[in-house]
Length: 452
Ligand SMILES: [Zn+2]
Image 1 (cartoon, rainbow, N blue to C red):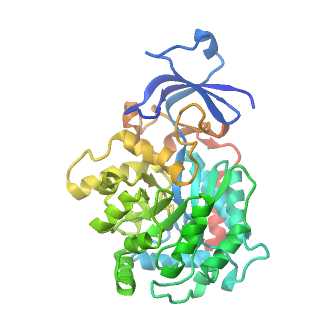
Image 2: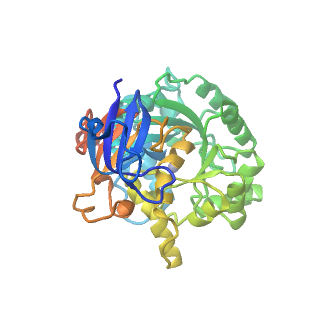
Image 3: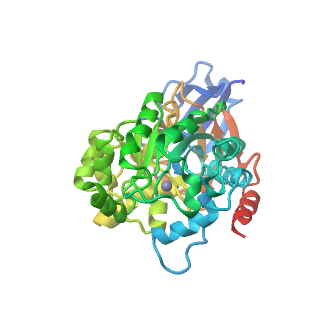
């Protein structure tokens, strides 16, 4: 691949509190080879001559955004669950209806469209928390990883990277009730058979990696948590787990095990710097300390948490305790990491009736480098030499962003303001259009296929 020079009107460089104007970014073979601020810094040796062939990037250029928590098929539920009342648990019944209808072909089509929507939003890497493994009745497909393979292929079509977080899901309740109905498609029987299946899945695509997930303390018996954690640890891959999204999960765990879900995970060796707890909406003070002291990451999903009436997680306290924060769109009620990022700050404001809990660069970190790290891509999410050539450019001249200083972009821009997306050096989105996927048309068809 030939070298490319990009001239960013503004670029958000690592460890900078605000964007830097006029930055020349050079890339080759999918990597960033040079980053040169032209104002107040050292101009390139060739002076302006080197700039005539540079691709201009008007607006603010960010590193790639990472969506650290996704269930691709939930995209089919958007706008369909707002009739009547209910809560997380009644929403879950609707979600199961969609899950029951998917097969590898329809899963590929839906995920391809959902991931292409993410690409349009500036997301260069997705963490897919994948538990819909088997056919109806829990009968494995001829290839027992056919559903996971569909997701990996979908990400390739959409032009983004994926960490397939293959999820162990064995029981319906903390008490160990068996899976019933659509849930039977999630189960592998026990953690050893889960590991055996995942061992057989090794996509050779360079855009994909496999990690592990424990669905929750509801879905993996306490005695089998260490099997999943050990599998991830031996391979040095990320381990994710839904944690305390609902008070009911805490209550059931206390009744069954006499402790909180976080304490149970800590005692079974699940927490640590390669682990990401998703949500952590209702932790106790002691839980926050356990998470922070172990450097367990926390993936916040504010738009889903508001959509499902989960509550507001203690984001600032978790960060202070030592947990790196990342962001996920989870159920895809909204696919917009700008919205997720500012919600982390704005939700704290609602709770405390005070402003200014997170600096803008902390929100950028959560949306970029921390998310990539949580997904096992330690060489992405920063505009620095040697890192992956992911460039996400946001316009500052649109109706939402005109007059907004670059530092304020995360409080004004939406996914619709992303104009260009480069993933591993390849242009995936240009002028706000996906280059290979007709995203609205494919979303329409794929959602219709599994809902009508
Ligand atoms: Zn989730």
